[in-house]
Image 1 (tube, rainbow, N blue to C red):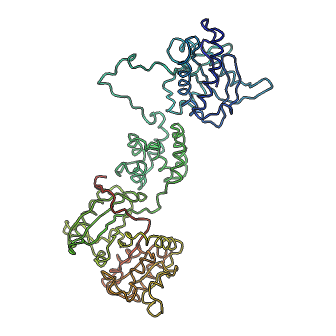
Image 2 (cartoon, rainbow, N blue to C red):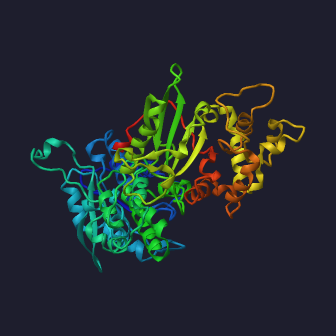
Image 3 (cartoon, rainbow, N blue to C red):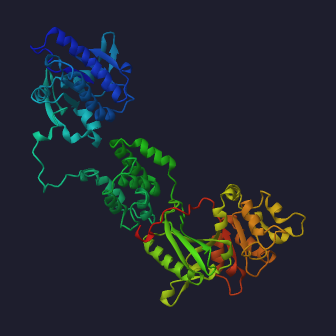
Length: 576
């Protein structure tokens, strides 16, 4: 950076004024550099009489210098001039350039130093500053303008104009912008009421040719999901013919608090989704654009915390059902719809009071409503019923949807259906052991770790003692759980399993644990072990005969990572 005091030798200045201005120059420079995060003492400097050569540490971002330094210089010049007589006030010309230089015994030398001083003395720059009320003429070399300023919209490259430079043997051009001019709106003509404000595009069309060629061919079933994630669920999921169409749609959406535009974040997510050579090119494009916006650190933070789209992502539709506290024939139904596999918890869809006899039909309506919102998705769905204990014996696996069609369809044909415990969800002091057992199951999902109630009856220890052994991750009950524990003489198996944190509990309306054991071993005996149990139960149900035990097998499958705050504000998922 080279600096020169404009009109330093003006006849109106006396020696005392020149001394004050020279001293003031270094005070202005030190304060302005400190204001942008540069320690003046860490810079290499050379005094040049009515100016200076300043070498900024190479580690400081050039775009940040071009963005912030002019405004800080204007501020400090104004502060200095406000306490001086006119003869001791200053205007500055500042030239910026970058390149490799070296130091000898007399100072810094090299062609970049020569060029910086040449453009600093450009006649057009001197004339423009002299005939304006501006305080600073910022002059950028063609190299610096092209490589730094043009790449960062925040530096307002459109506000620079090209000027010719003819100094000694040098002939070329540079880029000039005046700062600190009078901003009084009375000096400018008013904007006509019919004039539309100019909105600059995120990227000019000529810069999008490569991006278009890469995105136009990309199709992925996760496209709506990626769009929703890029906008943090602010955009309803919808289908586009290609990733390019989705990108163009997202260009109209504002950036969030981190300043990364959703369109750029979308390209980042697509790059991770497709991988390979195209993914690498898209990633490079993203990084170039966030550098322009000076949002690299924000993107890195997102990369560190972002979860990947699962190979086989699932959406969940959750229903919480509990008895009405006054009328045992009524229940309270709450529901949540997940539109993104990583969006948790989704907002509540509301609370409804209804008759237990109407429960299947109201849930049918909610499923149809959810399917309308998911019509552009291409991922499987799991229905989870968060049940109060008195309602655990409802025949959910035989429930159907599309009753209004006259030909209702069993839920199990289209969805994996699991039961969850509302009691455990609402009992926070049971959550820690629940998480411990879940993590243990993920590490070792062997089906042998599911205990059978019948096996403990021949031993000396009651079921709560048996289940406290960390080897167990599940329980096969001898009979369905009662609406309430009937006796305190012996531990209740369901309560013991919930307290111990077991995430998997199974029962059957008529079969004992001995009868169920072979079935459970078969369902959980595959490569995924117990982790595949809900999907294997559905697959077996689809091929089962009328008397097959699996048709009425209840799987309580409780994931501690999907919990709710029940008093959160509700929303209308149909409108999301």
